[in-house]
Structures are given as C-alpha cells and as structure tokens.
Length: 43
Image (cartoon, rainbow, N blue to C red; front, side, top):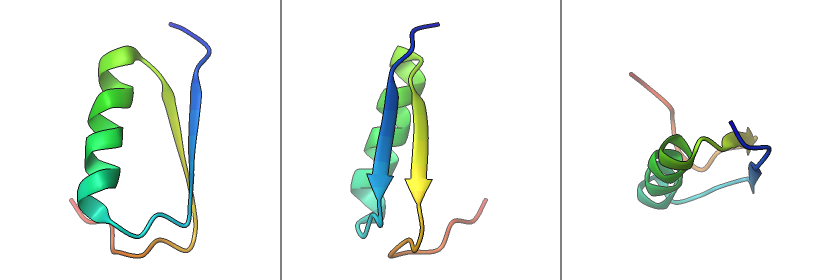
C-alpha cells in the first residue's frame, strides 16, 4: 500500500466525492473527509 493521503475539506458535491472515493479505492489511497459535509452519508 502506498502512502498517499487525499483530504477533502467540506466537500459539497456528493457525485464528485463518490468519484474520488472510488479512485482512492482503486489506487489504495487513504481518504479523509473534513466536516461539515454538504450532503448526508448513508449506506
């Protein structure tokens, strides 16, 4: 696993955040979301 960390500060657009989540999963990066989020996170 690499040491890449991605930080999103107060993300507002859920679709863009979802794309970044998938990209981080694909490259093995760690994603950090800083609140407040501009959307709700549900299952």
